[in-house]
Amino acid sequence: MKITELKAGEEISYSGELIVMRDAAQKKIERLLSEGLSLPFSLEGKIVFYAGPAKAPEGLAIGAIGPTTSSRMDIYLEMLLKLGVMATIGKGRRAEFVKELCKKYFSVYFVAPSGTAAALSKRVLSAEMLAFTELGPEAVYKLVVKDFPLLVAIDSRGTSI
Image (cartoon, rainbow, N blue to C red; front, side, top):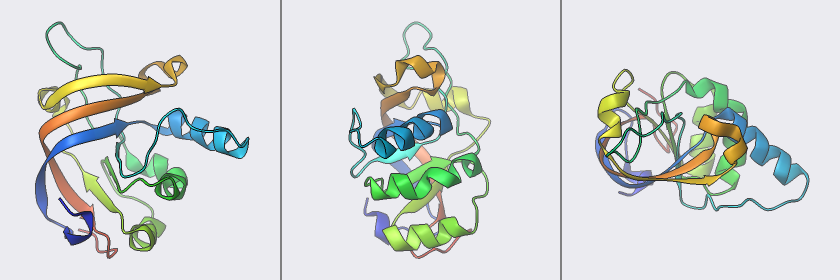
């Protein structure tokens, strides 16, 4: 998958790594960077999924995991893009400036189907907590997914659906 070739409205089935984080983790990243500290993980070339996973039931890698409202994360988007994030995943509209950021950083915003968190969890092959355990369900996780359904909501040219 080449991010810059995707077009708004295109559906894809993604297999690979996702970094799961929400606003509390992004706020912590912002604070660490402002203090001149390093992050305990790399975001270079990663896709960030705005979601909060539920505790894994026995036999599954993770519990229900659905997208959360992306507009809450808009204030942190440029920071993530500067750290090398190539795409974000969530649900709902984003601020108008997000289109310009997608163009500037050749990034993409995907939406994942909401209301299907239990079904999406079956697409997760493995889950690993990466950092910020003190944030509980808002800690940073790395997921490996297979055939994860996504829709391009804003492409790298700033076109949106």
